[in-house]
Structure formats: C-alpha cells, structure tokens
Image (cartoon, rainbow, N blue to C red; front, side, top):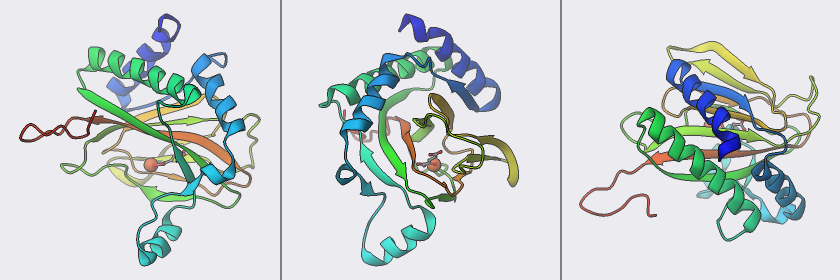
Length: 212
Ligand SMILES: O=C(O)CCC(=O)C(=O)O
Ligand SMILES: [Fe+2]
C-alpha cells in the first residue's frame, strides 16, 4: 500500500477537481504484473460475449458492444492480488473523499480487431449504485493508428470530447459513473483491459445489496 499512496492521492485529487482521472500504475506494481500473467494463462474459451440476454437483446447488444469478458474472482491468486489492490484504493478514496464505496467488481475485456463499445453511461442517476468506473489497460506497445481509444465526453454536452485515452499498458482511468458518457473506438488489433466499478451499498430493509 505504501508505494501506491502517491498514486491513490493523485487519483483522489483528480476526482475531486475533475471527476475523472487518468494516471499510470507503476509498471513494476505486482498487481499489474499478476494481471499480465493471468492473461497469459487464460484462453479465449474463458472469455464470453458481454451482456448476452435473450436472442433479440443479443442482436441489439452486438450493435452497441463487441467485447468479450471474464469476471475476476478472489479464488484465483493472480486475480485476487488485483482485487485487493483495488480494495486498498477503495479504502483510500473513502477516507479521502467520503464516497462510501462498498464493493468492487471487475472483468477482463478483450476487444478483437474491429470491436468497439458505442457511447454510453455506466450508471443512470437515481437508479444505479455504480459510483466510480475504472479501466486499466494491458496493451504493451499500443501505437498511434491501432485505434481502440477511450473517448470521454463532457457531462454537460455529450457531443463535446473531453479526453481521448490511448489504451497503453498500465494506464488507469477512473471516473464518476453517472456523469461521463464515453465510448471505445474500433480497435484495429486485439485490445485487453480490466473494466471495473465501485458500488455503494443500497441495502433496504436489512437486505445487503450488493451481497458481500
Ligand atoms: O475499455 C474501455 O476503455 C472502456 C470500457 C467501458 O466503457 C465499459 O466496459 O463500460
Ligand atoms: Fe463504460
């Protein structure tokens, strides 16, 4: 935790001032190295098309997003290392910004060449309990021209581009889920990332949601 304190503080400041943060992890960070190792072990069979529902939803879904995902779980030692790193970030941000973040969930995402994710919000005001979105990129040597940029739009004018982020290895993007529309431009080669969400606890009547 000690070595990541500067980064966590920087993220807290960015969020406080801008609501969005673009930083880089230390490239020797064990949690990052663990993810790289895990990606080597996972096969394409471990990835599933994101958000598949009924057949017609599947068709609609295809127009919106084309990534394939694999959820992280604490039962895997590599995945667990990253989850506990994000747990540390959660504790830090709660202390620093009083966000009341309760849980974190995340998945690997694989965008094949040609895959994209159209402009969307990760949460809707008043409805969702997703508070903070995070995206960490796992692509060494991503070149200009490889596409796959994350485009973040102005919350007050969703046609106005705020930031264009190259999905470079170690880059960590954090933003307020209800505020910032964003999209992934078509990738021209395989693109890997971890997309995740911190949630608040929306328990009612003593039922804990999300479950711990
Ligand atoms: O991979 C990215 O850059 C963003 C992914 C995203 O927006 C999502 O999974 O909700
Ligand atoms: Fe998103």
